[in-house]
Image 1 (cartoon, rainbow, N blue to C red):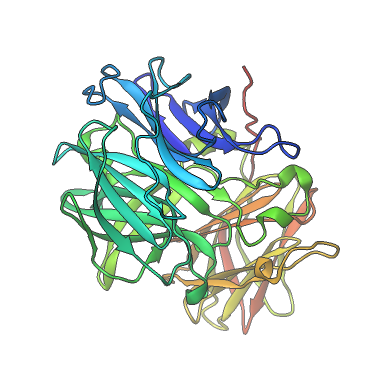
Image 2 (image 1 turned 135 degrees about the vertical axis):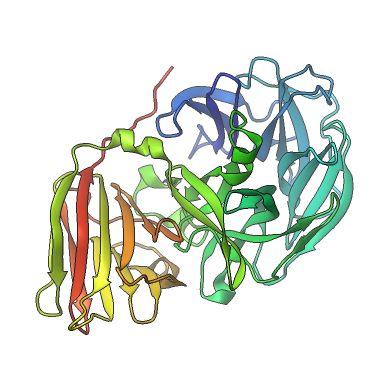
Length: 464
């Protein structure tokens, strides 16, 4: 995926799609636009596959060349994307004079020829204003390569960031953010899709905060952090809003992730869902911590509220005990459930389990200060054991409880914990009809406060 926001306040999303599946192969760049990051308009194919003898169009990124550094005109939309022919990966350039709806291939493609590495793909380009240069982060197996350019067509290798403990690195990106929205406190963030199995995780978006000197990234802490703690948030991308002030652009970005996992992407039980789906668009900020590097926080974009129906306050407060679980009926197919989970002061529960779908259980461990998500494989499915992996992360447990904002859709669950301190995203293949959230307490009584259930409308893409 790639995205940019144009001067007309529309966000342009480009994503890989094979319209010839399953008979044909290869992906093209399909195109969608949105004015609110929630409802999207299908704009068709932006860059077609197999047009220049270099293979199909794979992952890349888009920038707006406001200063005409590449010579295609001020404000030209320029795409850098991987093409692969006979297993050889190269980077090609495409440019648009109509705002990103149609692209022409550069006569000098590929602008970056293959250096001999098997994995050499996913260029993410950004403008380094402080040094007046374009910077590219490129996935090179177990390394992220950094390249710079003055004109988007000629690139020079500068350095590499190597990790041999996170599997194959994909879809890297580098950007600057302010800590707690303070423009006087900025840091650089290096993100990439990685495999966290050596740390009890699955694949996801790993990131580091640190410094960038124009040629090299130096992490503050070598240990990665993770933008999402669930099993299905991969190949994520972030971008800022060019219409915002400089301070606002440093303080806030947006993020989208591919809800799927390479461990079972080819074995999902529903043919029409074989590609997975996109997450909801998230607003991300960078929060300082007293005991470690700053942490990315995420929450659904505010415009998602436009899909909400009439909220139903289930109850100001309810309880769940080991012998008497609580329940919340879900009369529609998609909902937003908000509640605060806390331990009763007299007989405090240690854990609270929320069964969000037939195959998804989310747990808040109030004693150990963790949250976790686990799925069970359904009878008749061929999903591997990794689909049912228990995934756990630490959370803050305030005295008044842990606030949860949960999106329950037809085929997915996205849980935002503690105002975005943690998120857990997962596909779900349980029943799609009306159902019920069951809430069980372990070791005592759990208090459930400010419980609100809101039906969510669908936002099908508009067709041309």
